[in-house]
Length: 90
Image 1 (tube, one colour):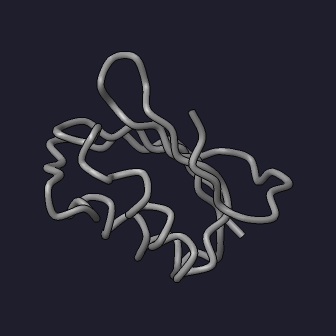
Image 2 (cartoon, rainbow, N blue to C red):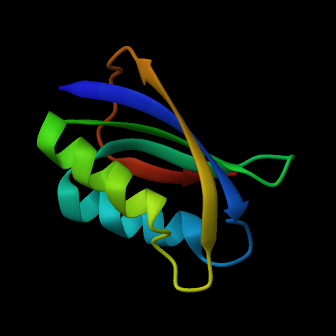
């Protein structure tokens, strides 16, 4: 199990990005959360087995929502936490 935080920049708010992210996380068994930030970016905490986590990150970089456009993703390794699912937070 590995964990990362992602800060996603681009057209990622008000375009269904968070809910599309949750759908992908649920499909891959990724745990954590996604939330909008005041600066217009989206923050994600994601953890799961390495292959699924790599797939999740790749799909986030391609923008999971058709109306979204990702310009940059900052990734930081994190400590695994105790999550039981993946949540959209506010």
